[in-house]
Length: 234
Ligand SMILES: Nc1ncnc2c1ncn2[C@@H]1O[C@H](COP(=O)(O)OP(=O)(O)OP(=O)(O)O)[C@@H](O)[C@H]1O
Ligand SMILES: [Mg+2]
Image (tube, rainbow, N blue to C red):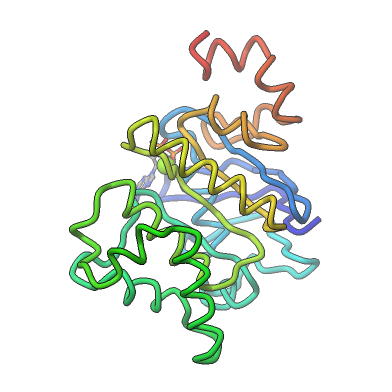
């Protein structure tokens, strides 16, 4: 397993947001995490990337215990997160935002990685000199994802990449996410749009109030009556 999480807990003061989360993700898998508002999905991703402290349990990555590792060391190990709400640096150009993502690597690899992202997202090349804050929502999401990819992650953590986007743009973003997995990357995808996420995922986890309540192959979850009723609106 590339990622193995056991009994993970996390708190905001006295509020316990994660109540003992267990999950495992194999290398090369695309795994979706779905759940209602406030279930703890963002908290779980932030605890995996290290920006939110774990109060108990353990996180193993590639066989190493990273539970107490600071965030930038996790990035170095290959864990990159695209945070909820995009959070690009608005006044900076598209290209400078991308360069910020590449805080490791030689000049040559940075230039090559930049070109790779421009090939993946041609609109970003067109807008390379434009201030990131003036991009559309969908373009900002592409930029946030491309910036994370500049760190050459093995494990990509995505928090609601389709939030606030039109259906067509959502399809484009999720097709890109699927292509990362097809390229061999491991992806953990949080989505409010459970149907879309489970449609592209290999496996899924369902979270309710700080706990995993269900997991399995994505196609089984799509066919599950409880999942349908609670998350798929059918
Ligand atoms: N900074 C904070 N301070 C206090 N409580 C917080 C904080 N951030 C989150 N919480 C609480 O932790 C719980 C989990 O929140 P979290 O943001 O992880 O949920 P989520 O599943 O990502 O929800 P959403 O689908 O709305 O993004 C919620 O009850 C929330 O109110
Ligand atoms: Mg969230």
